[in-house]
Length: 132
Image (cartoon, rainbow, N blue to C red; front, side, top):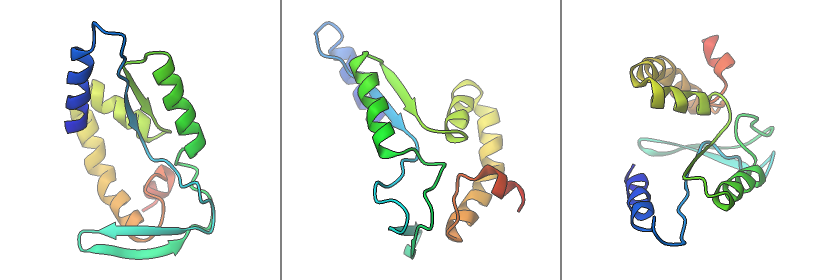
């Protein structure tokens, strides 16, 4: 939130100039290294494990697509751009429009997501977490 506040202030100060500010809030972005590249998982005490990604994580946005969307938002003078795939983007909208509901969902899904990530699975596979 500190960066958000900083760039909001910057946008306000530069509003009467020809300089634009676009605040970009990206969600999970995949690695450009692809399948077979090392993936590090960190916890409260540091590195938990390092493992090779067997397949591309479909929940993460491809880096090239993320760059394309950021460039497009800046070019078109968008003040704020949220860039992510479902379910991360949906949860961001819920938090923005109905914060109490967002916290209820996060408190229910959060522990399952943390457990999945500790086990080396995707923390964004909603269907997989629902079966736990």
